[in-house]
Length: 235
Image (cartoon, rainbow, N blue to C red; front, top):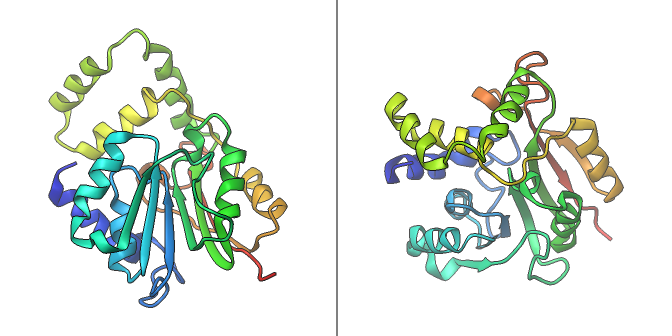
């Protein structure tokens, strides 16, 4: 993804792709937020631009930590990015007003433990958004069939083929993320909703996506992208 594409996505992430209350102009104002599994730092920047007081990020990738920090250097006094796992978030209980974990837990060795960590660091009265890949559909069948070849076809060769066929870096990312990641779990929406309920969260709402591979479609895309918003009740 080019710097221009990265910036366009980052600057419009919550405004363009999220329903109320996340797209409200004042929702993030003066909040301390966590992006768990911050990747290239797109959501970190989006939270900062939306008015967050401070944004912390954790990621297992050293390169991700470096890129997120570098790309958001204009907000250096409002960010804190750590090299750490979402399974052991290095912050005390009830630290954050808002916790965001988008497309991360399904790549970990213990997604449920990761979810418990997200809830642990969320303040009572705070909001959480968490998303994972959904189950079902022909697309997921094709993805898992392709993963049979990930140890046979080098990733570099696949990348060269993709570049020859398409100039869209989002397509490259989608294919490589589906095919070559070591772990890729999928879930039904009811499974994830149960996690939220068992954690004692309230106002649990599924955030449906209408964009491309993330959209719901029982035959082709199955559950689509399973993304929920909820609140941690006041004690």
